[in-house]
Length: 137
Image: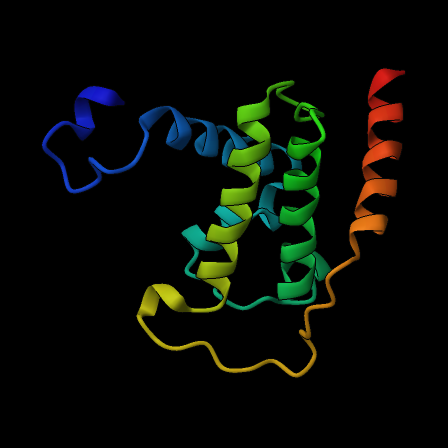
């Protein structure tokens, strides 16, 4: 991938990170099949549909969970690396970018149902402790 990016408009991105994001996408496709982000994107389906995991808050929670695990030295559960935890954060952000229609250069409309409620640091510390304990098993 590095050679393909030389002199290209994407030269400001890190090829290894993009490869890790691609790994996350491939894993999602293998895990969810026809309900995966990739399958829906290939069909041009930008609707969030009935799947709860495609809603803004669920995507944000999932990304936050991966970032929290990274901050607490918990490797990705499938790839067993830190870089894949960060790639999963970015992949979730990319999914939100797609479902929000931002690739069509429009401004996102407020979603009254998607009010972000951020957990407290104490809540995150408790979750992180549980994740470390589970990973240690």
